[in-house]
View 1 (cartoon, one colour):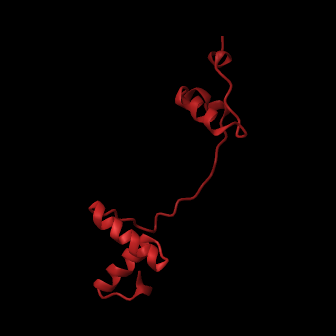
View 2 (view 1 turned 30 degrees about the horizontal axis):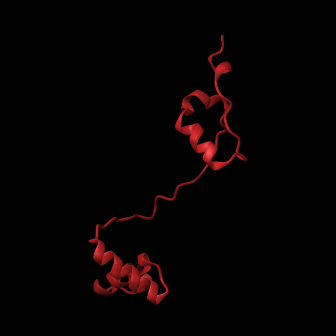
Length: 92
C-alpha cells in the first residue's frame, strides 16, 4: 500500500496563509516531495554583509537621525562610516 494515500492533501497557494502555516507546522515536507515543483532562482553572492551589534540606545538614536534625514538607517550608517574612513560616498 502506498504510504502517501493516507496523508492529508497539501494546501494550495490560494489557501488562507494561517491554514498553510498550521498545515506545515504539523506536516513534513519530506512526505510531499513528489507533489512539489522544482523552482529556479539566482543568488547574488558578490555583495558582502557585515553585522555589527549596537547597544539599543545607540541604535535608536541612529534610526531617529536617519528618519529625520529621510534615509534608511543602513544608508546613514554607511555614509557616516565612509566619511569617518575618509572615503567618498561613491566608493562604497
